[in-house]
Length: 251
Image (tube, rainbow, N blue to C red; front, side):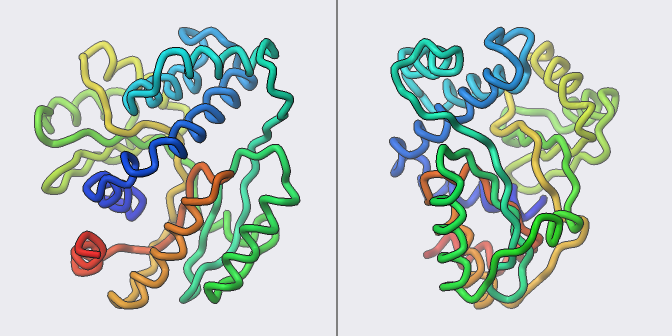
């Protein structure tokens, strides 16, 4: 499993999303707004929007909140913020490459906060392209192992153009080209299979493995970035070993 998926699993186990539900709703709202502005407000014709709404429902976001987010995207809402999606690149402690996906109405504020956090943790901001060459964009789906048949997921994924299907003790992960995302969404939906996570992610071409102590230090920085209001997601080339994962779960 990728380091990103392992970290998502750890957060679910620790109940991070439940503990910060207000922040989660804010991020989901911004994701719906961005998706609707980019591809229109028709859920059936805008797959990014359908995914964002499905994620919101999965997090028990009230229907009124979802409807308000869709109205904001169409200009019907009262709020005057104009959100834009932006990616920042840099290095965390121990030289780990990091890409930070943000949705913000104030780029200057966002970049200043991210730069301050990275520098304080022993990292630094990078120029555009300084880190992204180490990553590739891909479609990623994760399914709980319980209640899903690996062979069935494998069959649907491969027929839909997936590059890789793996499993660990708890999850099945499907990685596919970006252009296969719509096909796989339709295949899984038709089969009645609902992923825990589905979206376009930045995956490292090669992972960096550190000792447990340095891994924990780096993950604290990544977690601090994820807690920032404007940050939607954080990707890194850090490889999380089983020992480091166990240590993080016990913190």
